[in-house]
Amino acid sequence: MPAIAATAQDTTAQDTTAQATTASATDTTAPATAASSLTTDAAHDAADTAREVETSRDVDVAVSAAPARVSVLGDPSVPLPAPRTVWNGSAPRHITADTTATTGRPRPAWTQAIAVLLGAAALGILAAAAVAFVRALLSFPFMQDFLAAFPGEYTPAIAVEPGFAPWVNWAHFFNAFLIVLIIRSGLRIRNEKRPTAFWTPRNNPKGKVSLTIWFHQALDILWLLNGAVFVVLLFVTGHWVRIVPTSWEVLPNALSAALQYVSFDWPTEHGWVNYNSLQQLAYFVTVFIAAPLAAATGFRMSGMWPKRAERLSKAYPIEWARALHFPVMIYFVVFIIGHVALVFLTGFLRNLNHMYASSDAVGWTGFWVFVASMAVIALGWAAARPLVIAPIAKLFGSVSGR
Ligand code: HEM
Image (cartoon, rainbow, N blue to C red):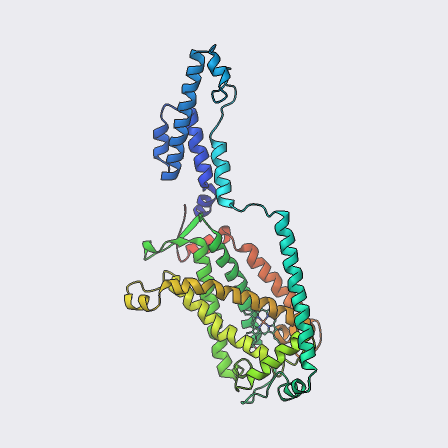
């Protein structure tokens, strides 16, 4: 696997600098030759090092030429006239400087830790106050009337069969599997300063991107395909009525459900037949707003965007896409945390049976299928590394190291 070998052989900037330093330190007769084969930065470093070595040589020569000079002994800036036994090495100094530059973050001080604790305590107090306030509010007769009129869900305007067909279960599983890897690879793209491997499309040598970006986009395509199949089946089978609001009553009912959640007196769950309005809105926003937004902003930033369509590019500037793409990811993360928490807090055996076993019974089948699906996701997570990705990427283009 040459691509992997290239990745493994790849050296960081620091490695290169260190090698250059060693080369110029040991072979001071031709430091410029060593530097010429390096990148500009590394060449500068090597030249600096060579200069430093030269300077320290000069000092050595001066010191040995006048070993008994009192002024040298009295001046702390000049090395003592003893034979040098350890090379004062500029490489370690360079490495220290580089490491702080890349990690950059100072360690949090204890005052900051206390500030975080106080912030968390303040949030806790605010949350408790909100619960107390909403509970008090709901005890008023006019709010009791509101809850009676809008219990948190409404009867859909169009009749729909209860339950979940296996295709919903499968689409949901593929969606969860892919979105976990999409979020992970997306975050990796943001944090990756010097990618180690690249992918180039066969027909367009200018379309070279990092292997991480290729992986992210390949997952996006699979995710969109899965989403498209889901949406088509949603409308073919009539299941869409479950997750698309069919009445404006959804709004007051969603408010009612939200108040009930905050009061910890939660709305009755029977997702097999009908979602509560807040749940319906959340699913609707996720499938019909957040997912298309993620795709539209990602597409704008990708190499697939038609660069020649200048008017289109002007009408939809790439800056908009950049500004929106990350917040959309945050939305997905917040949705997933809230969604999974509620699945577990509102009768997890029954809920998991709905989505993982197509059954409304209270039993363990869905739970074990869910555990197996988590194991598959964990496997995918562990496999998401160049060693595994590169051979797949090679089927669609060429993979190279830095
Ligand atoms: C792996 C963690 C997840 C678990 C355990 C889980 C569980 C569930 C369950 C049990 C339901 C049915 C709720 C009910 O019957 O009341 C459901 C529905 C749904 N989930 Fe998830 N989910 C997960 C991840 C996700 C992710 C990552 C997304 C999207 C980003 C998502 C989107 C949806 C949608 C749109 C529905 C409604 C499906 C429909 O009725 O057509 N879920 N989920």
